[in-house]
Length: 94
Image (cartoon, rainbow, N blue to C red; front, side, top):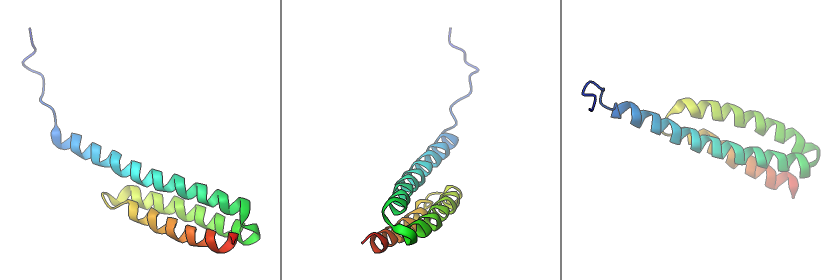
């Protein structure tokens, strides 16, 4: 026989957890791509690339931490850092 005392599903909590997972996925994906760009700076950028690579790597970690607590628009700080790192990669490896 079915148990009639089982609690119903908490849909609000389910949706909040899903939104957090999606935010973590977006921030994490951008952060990993940015780390790969920092590795390219380390490998091909010379002395300036190594310096800017470390700065960008630290900025990536800070932006990812901010983005995880920012909620739905948490991917924006990581995307800004990614754009700046991309410009630095173009300028130092050319």
